[in-house]
Length: 315
Image (tube, rainbow, N blue to C red; front, side, top):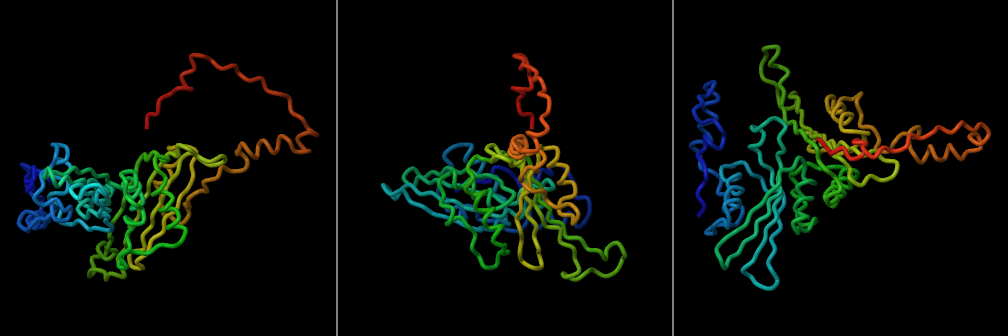
């Protein structure tokens, strides 16, 4: 059996610190005194040892997490020997809500077992939405259909959301993900007035996630930067996932400052006709353009030492 590599205070990085309030001390006590999640049973690595120090460290990332929800799992066996097995899991890590604000709350976990040697390998990747956890698991060898959550208790989505999720899950390395932010705030409007606590229906649930990505292979006429926005209707048990296009990362970040506001819709992924290369070529060959030709503009010859042509990506 693997031993946790750190104490509960080390796991929460509160060594040598005191609780700020009695409520904080009570919450800490819930973690310190209650039984921890039997993570070895969840990952099916009981009586196995981590093969390397890195595997042990990655196992330790979940060793103290009592609030792990398995959304989907696939178990496979090597066709040549029953001693080699793999598992692929999509999980929700509820403890991430207490981590750095905006941290991804989902993860894909890949476990490889060598039953003959009594060891396991483990790797994982945090993800802002399920589709990105699936994307990583598929790259590890998982079958998308088997790592797709199907619990009837989970929120539902519309057809457009499902299609976008599947496209992201199967997109391979097409997108470079620059940043994400997950909001799971529950606001009580009665607090400001000093009245009694609001009912569940009166609370404000600010549950949403935005993801900024660079499309490494954009289609002609489409913006190279995308924002994927997941908006959750907590009381309605549903959500939507949409995407918008932006010319650069700065424009995408600017949009996220007011993400979800009614007067701030996601812009289309297609470049506007006025600036699209395809539409510009069409205007150049139109009868109107032929009737009123413009003087050619001399192009500046390329400079061998022009640093902008090979400027490294800094984001």
